Length: 411
Image (cartoon, rainbow, N blue to C red; front, side, top):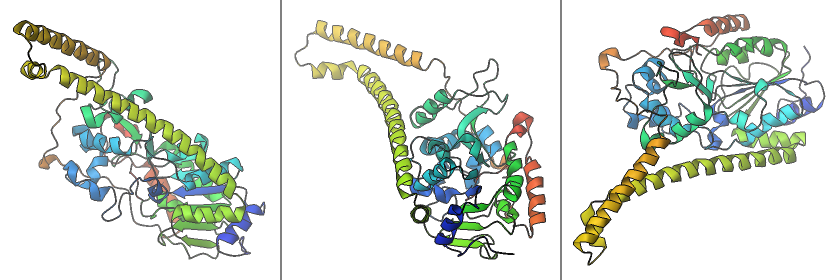
């Protein structure tokens, strides 16, 4: 079989893309794509997300993304969500490259394990993204499945470090916990993931795998489904999967953004890439400013309330020589001001009831993580069967929650 690539390097990939023979490019993304944005991956020793969760007092790190643990104690997840919530991070050069592929009408599909929505924020069309492990883009009640307002969700998550109020369903008589539509252990993969094997096997001329360890299946199995006549490129810090075993495999080890920048140089797209990336800076700055404004407003309210409720003797000491009548007048004014501020704060929070004190699950009731398989498939047929069977898997089932997506990301 004749090779589609003249050389198995950056120049070979660029020449193939420019030849006109490569019309449909599919991508597989992992956490390595977003680490340049400041988002930690999951499993890197010392710096990964799981390595830094001790402060949340979890029975095991993965519990923060385990559906049964969330039902009993959602506070650790929302503590983490406050730190990772979209809008605080800027898409990377690699995210801008994905949009650039779309604008050149070359992007068939972007399969991502990431839940950070940075592909969307970079301007990649929604119909060109399959979020295998869900994302923070939408959310709903885990009890009745009613969607929850996006703006209200964002406001509550950004304020969570201050008020510890967990979002709850607003449907009359429900009050179930609200969870972003990210895939927890114990949930099923999104239904749209079922079209992935067909896209990889029949509708892809070049598969580029970027920033993933390829250890979590069925996502990792997609790389094995790529036909022999379809070139595969790996852009990653380490060699992973079975890359290097095929004649048309291209292994480009290094930081994602640096390799992508080199590829765009070869394609003659460098100027376009940088222009698109600059656009993401403006949108991110605006989002960060809005979040900062909301946080500052909350802090000002609390400072005013604290000042208004300062003991009257301190107020009297601040005003030297005040007479007894003046002290009484000052006390009355302080009381009125405190009452006014409290009413304003109550009105602003009228639609949100305080979260109940939910005790953590006891050691006798510690849920078991339903993790995706890490065992690689031996062949394309086995990989295809594995993908089909694992897409259908629902993990631990309880109530109506089984409609939701089965493993978090891996990276």
